[in-house]
Image 1 (cartoon, one colour):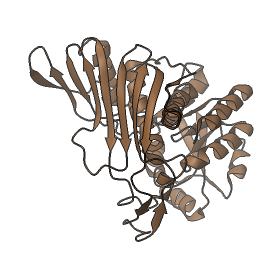
Image 2 (cartoon, one colour):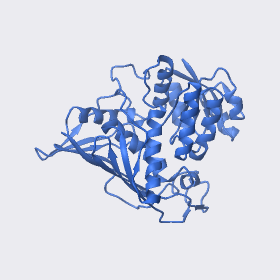
Image 3 (spheres, helix red, strand yellow):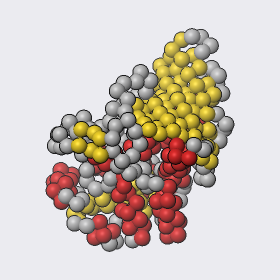
Image 4 (cartoon, one colour):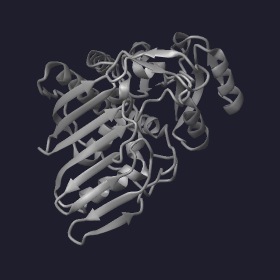
Length: 365
């Protein structure tokens, strides 16, 4: 069993902690570290975490730790992951891999030079919903794929998130924040991305926080908040993408995949399951399909468990940098295209790994 040290005990850490101690049997969390020590103390009190470190360097120096779980803010991912790799630790990072392409490239290079794996979120594509959709597409339910539409449109996070500022800074914005869920689901259903064309806009220069504890504070917006893109897959089909923090309401959300036999409505890729609906163009009827895989509940930590099994067994991992870098390059390419007005051709290539095995014991990969 590989042992994990967690850096960052913020909002997302709660579900990781729960699943470490209640669900997954292939990894063990042994240490936590946060700049706000009270957060680490709370994790120790609630879940019995063995060790607390005041600095990440102290945690990295612990010889017992095999994998560092990086749950820091997006613009901090690079510094934390790089330091962990240089200390000889494997890394699993929340999304995105880096705040820009250069950061991702360096992290992948360091990991390769040191014989380490660096992987990361999202792992929602490994859940019951997306895995079932992948199976239905592979079995020919929709016929030959024609295209698709990915939509994540909201009016931002400052009305509900307790610390929303970083969403509007470098490494944030709707594309780098929510895009990984949509793009990771897309490539696991339909395969890798070859080329992108992007457009970006910012509707509001500032944001007013209306959620506690920062009610009334103003956020300076330093990243585009409305991004659209046309994505060409290796197969040649084209999919459109909208990610926005500027839209009050949209009737189209999540993912639609179009095929010669009908349209598949894919569950929210930020979740592990949801309604799977197919409009059958041949009969004119709408059909709902049950999920056929495990992990319908919030199973964050699933991807870390998969990375640990890849490290232990040498098998390909589903959440390695092969995937997270391809997604990062896609997003960076969209932003580059938006700046230059020219299409961006990806240098990385992605082939899908094996689907999940629904026969395995829950919590074991």
